[in-house]
Length: 444
Picture (cartoon, one colour):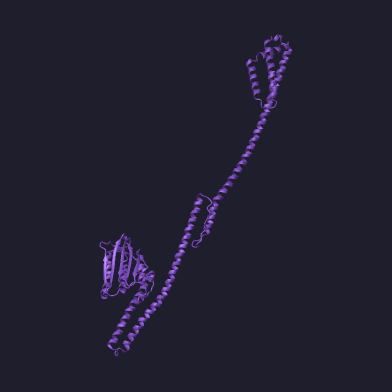
């Protein structure tokens, strides 16, 4: 009786297995067969499929046969087959679980390796960046340090400057090239400066020599008239009453000539102090040049009339006012005209011409005097220049040097043309300056 109840329960349990469950089990087994990844999984899947087909037929037979006619043998086969399929499923699940554990372990291992490799790669990248930074900084800093070393060793005035090798075409190369050009210009400047210094030294040497000759010459020129004057005055003082009128007249004439000669020499010596005074700048004034010329020439015209020399003044009409030093500039005119009077004989002619051309005022003084030897013309404006014609007139050669200094202070220049026995022409020019701040404007 108990066995019949048990079989009836089993039959009822078999009757409750729907066809959808069997179909789902079949589909899942097909999926397992198509996704085999682990060793031993195929064998288990094949066995499950074989058992499933037997299981399916067995379940079908159990549902079709009346429970009263079930045999213990068929029912026992159903239980054994179910147990086998459950065991196979457990084994398949175990294989997949073990595979998942191994995969997880491999994943952890790979993650650990990835972290380690990432750390190593990060360290390598940091080292590479540091090495690259050092290399780039060294490459950039080396030419700068080289340039700085050359700059520290270069000293202005030494005459020799380095040439830094250009190692790149970037900004550093451009900077090095700029310094090379600067060094080249400094070297050219030093050469030019040395040349100027050499010329100036030569001028100083020649000036010292000329000064020495000047001292000897002035001593001689002072001694000669002083001796003659002393003799004339001594004779007049000691035995003047016993001398004839003609003799006394000659002695007085000689003494007068010696006094005139001494006065001229003293005036030339006064010009030496004028050289220093003329070098100091003065305020300029805007004046009518025609009025200035006629006023400073007036005393010389009387001397020319006494000597029988004609003086012509040719001043262009409508000349604008000119900015000059009202104290020094007239000295230039009187010196040039005075020299012309000194070296022009009776019956000669002196012409002073003033005109404007462009932005320059031109002044030209021409005489028909004895002229100047061509060998003296290059040094005529040097200080203490002496040559025979001046020696005869009792001058020491400072007037024309002062004239040139004053003209250069006005921004101009002077030149001379002369032929022996035919006369001399001095031409100088100054710019037509406008009235400047701080200068006085007057009509003289």
